Image: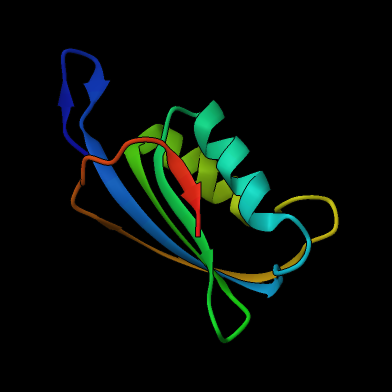
Length: 97
């Protein structure tokens, strides 16, 4: 993370979330959290039952989203979250695919 004038440069975060995360409004809830944090990107179901989340924005907001993903919405049962930071991409909004 690079700091300039008290602001964090935007970066990317890719998370793979495992557990009971499909059919429990996980993607829609992730979208709400991401928008609340001012992030862009998407959440999508994967064929193996996981959810992939790709988000872009300031590192502190991405950290907050990653912390939320470890718990998820009320009916989810998250068993694992793997994550990696990467380069920023300019996207608009946050979609569920």
